[in-house]
Image (cartoon, rainbow, N blue to C red):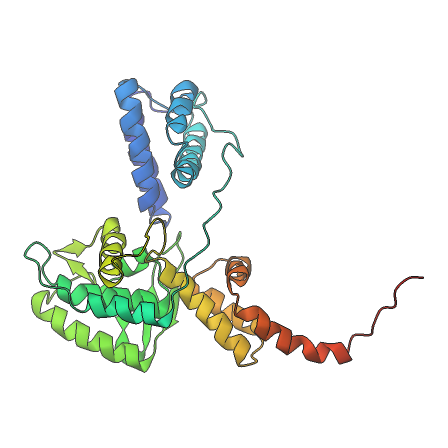
Length: 318
């Protein structure tokens, strides 16, 4: 325990520790800094998380269950770190303080919706403050759509990890220190080759595949532009929380499950491939999509007809 350190320095030490173990930890760093900013305003000399202050802050997040859950998880991990390092009076948030938020049902796109969206996206004009955006935007959304990438995975994708000539992309350090290789179609590879040639004229030594100056675009870029071009395609669409750019990822799972079922493939076998492609940690995360695939069930009923001759009838009890 170092009594000379205040909360912000301890939080910085914790972030350095997490990143040194292989975690990206960007969203958690953002949440922890939000908490530290609040704590320092209330108690400028605060050293470690205190119960009253923490409870009050968490109460202010009650209207944002996703943020609340992420904040609790991050603060609990930070407090455990402090406790191990001798700060025995630090407040550790008890387990099950907040339930994991239930995700809303994803939005599944019709083919004409996808076509209309990309048609408007291809009309994007150059902008002086966003050099090359007319090249980047159509390409980054096509990659998300075709590969089901998480938005952050697309934004932070580095040029050296895209191997379009060999038909694969390496996604490094996505959720935690997780990496995976995804293979792409020849059609997408040709599109990316053309994109790369155009964007390289503007950013010949770029680090990020989709550059914004010397860095990558921020977290709001994809969601903001998705909404903007969706509204261009569908001005009268009642857009509340759906659709989102992330729904392209859901669409990939939905479309593949339907296609495999229609082709009579063994879904149990194919799920393992889909799980690895999407970067899920276990197959239960992939099985989540079954309840959102209405087209799958008629196909499943047709597939299961053969079982009627195998399974005996069970007589009613007299």
